[in-house]
Each structure stands twice: as structure tokens, then as C-alpha cells.
Amino acid sequence: MLKNYYTQDVSAGVLAIDKTTYQNYLSLGNKALTTLQNLNNSDSLPLLKLPEKILDLEAVEPIAERFCEEFDDIIILGTGGSSLGGQTICALAMPPTTNGPSLHFMNNIDPDSFNLLFQGIKPERTGLIVISKSGNTAETLTQFLYCLDVFRSQISGVENHFLIITEPGDRPLRRIGTQWGIEIIDYDPEIGGRYSALAIPSLLPSLIAGVDAYEIRKGASSVIKQLISASSVEECPPALGAILNVALAKENNIKITVLMPYLDRLNYFGSWFQQLWAESLGKDGEGTTPLSALGVVDQHSQLQLYLDGPKDKLFTLILANQDDKGGLIPGDLTIDPELKFINGKKMGDLMAAEQRATVAALINNDCPIRLLNINTLDEKTLGSLLMHFMLETIISADLLKVNAFNQPAVEEGKALAKQNLLFEPKK
Image 1: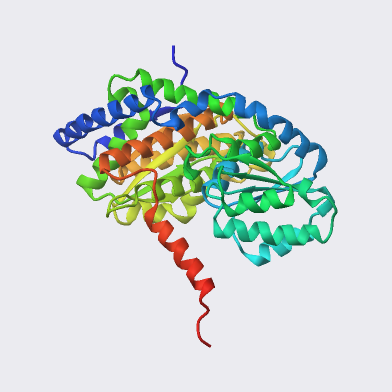
Image 2: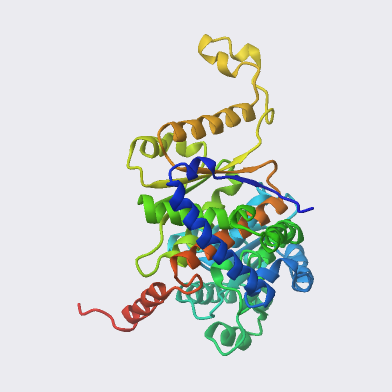
């Protein structure tokens, strides 16, 4: 029997689609599902086999242990997919364990952020992990070279404080690492950056943070098993989610997809999803714009627009079972009649009530929604959610007839940035 770590309800969203049209998209979805199943059977898409791998995790466990033993602070240098997956998974360890090092994900090139970071760490007790799939990412190379210069002036044996993760082959990051005698781990060239949440670039920091990477992959594996066994779109939640997104975009002019989890530890998950969805689908005039929100925070900052603004959005709410959880609000502090609603309740009871109220309000205002329900947010649940959205993205790309794995517009921007540095403007 297949183990499910989440459930999906698309019934409210489907109501916005004409029945005949929806059936047509189901047929298209079944073809896309078969294509993905064939890719799995032929081992043509290594991402689908990644959840079953163990040896690569076993190989990096000693590295994670060394970093935990030798360092109080660990700086992860990288941007985009080389950072967001790790941040998303490490958020499970929030607050950080008292015995482990503090992790600092530096995914930008803001000089002030680096200056502030360096004021709060001791170089001799700090390790750095440099992650770039291509080994040629301008931002990551800049971060690395700057940090290498700062650290070499303050400590001896600087090479022992750095670790590089990059693809095999002749590339700048690997050349510099070799020159300095820095340990280098191969970045799997068959796994794209934004699809690397289940790969070593994301799971090594997770191991350091105390998250069980094996359980992350077990959760992802449950979604793959569901994909393999599905005989139709209705039996494969990621495929059904893709159908809903594409049908609403094509037929109902729904051009924005809002992902709104209700747990703080899923806040980075929203940022990870934004890159995955936007960079995979935004091509040839296709794709919808992903927005990340956080319940209940954005019920105060965004819900007015969602309910009373343009009806151009699909809402995906990730709801957690919060009833009877958290601290009790005592009766002697809620004597005021206007506080009767919370008298004798727990904090989680309010969270649960807020979730139900938002769902009802969106439906009442004719906003297409779908619900992902989880009981507990743990490694298996997060792993299943990560794989769900990766598969949903890949299937959506198939339906939109775009390549889910390239990013030509991004490459153009990278080339122009380098040109701007090479050719200084006239003063």
C-alpha cells in the first residue's frame, strides 16, 4: 500500500472550468503522465531515480560530521537553485539545534550583508561551502573569491575551511579550488540547479543542520511510486495539479499562481517554488507568474487583493492540522467580552480557524483554489512536497510544450552582466 504524506483537493478549483474543457485537459494530462512514466522506465530522467539513492548521502556524511565538529558557523555561498533547496530543507531545523553550527545562506552579492556577517563570526571557527553547478556563476565566483581573500589574511590552512560543490570538467570554480587544494565534490551534471533540492548541494547543508536527508528522500520516493502506479491523472496528484494550472491559464485567463503555506517553516519553500515554476515554464510566451504568500501573515497584507481584486489567480493553500496545538490562552486573561472567542483555546485552534476561514472566503468570492493537507511537517512530508511540485512543473511544461530544464533568457542576462563589467561606461 502506498504511503501518502499529504492529500490534495482540487474540487473547488475544477468548478471554475467548463466540464467538457476539463475532460479534454484530462486526456492531454494522461498523455503527459504516460510520457513521464516512460522516461522513468527508460532511466532517461535521473531526477526520478534520485530518491532511491543512498551511496551519495553516505559519502558526504563524514564531511557533514567534520563541519559540525570543527566549525561554529558555516557559510553557504551560492544563488538560485544552489541555495534555495538547502534553505528550504534546513528550515525544518528551526530553531537551530544548540549543539550544531549556525548556517548562513548567502545567496546575494550585497556587500553590506557580507560585512555584517563577518562582524559576527570567528574565521578560525567558520567553514564555507561554495555551490555552483556550472562552476562559472558570476555571483558565486565573486562571493567565493572575496571570502577566500578575507579568510586567507586571517587564518592559516585556509583550504581546510572551504568545500566546493561543482560539476566535473574544466571550469573556473574547480580550477581555483584545485589550485588552492580545496576539497571538491562533484555536482551531478544530470540534475538541474532548480531541481537539486533532493541532491547533495541541498542535502549536505541539511545533514549539517541536523535534518534527516534519508527521510527527505523517502518522502520524495512515495510520490514517485504514486506516479509509477497511476493509471490516470486522477491517481497522480502532481499531474492533476498541472492540469488545473494549465487549464485555468489557457481557458480562464488565470495568469498568477499563489502558493500559500500556513507554517513558518515552509516560508522558504515558497521562494524555492517561485524559482522552480518561473524559470521552468516562463518561455515562448507561456507560463504563469508564481507568488509566495504565508498564512496567516498575508491574510492581513494580501487577502484584500485576493478576494476583491482581479480574478486572475489560482490559490494553492498548504494546510496543516493545528487543532488543539500550542499554548493555552487562560481564562483569567480573556475576561474582556471581545476576547471570548479565544477563551480557553490554544494558539493552534486560532490557526486552524484562520485556515478554514480563508478557504471559505476564497470560495465565496469565486477564487479558484486547491488544498494540500498535511498532518505533520517532517522530513518525509517536506520531501513529498518537494517532489510533488517538481513533477507538477515538469508535467505542466509538457502540456505547455516548453522545455522544463533550460533557461535561455537567464543565460542572456548573465552574459550581459559580464559584458557590463568588461566594458566600463564612458565617464
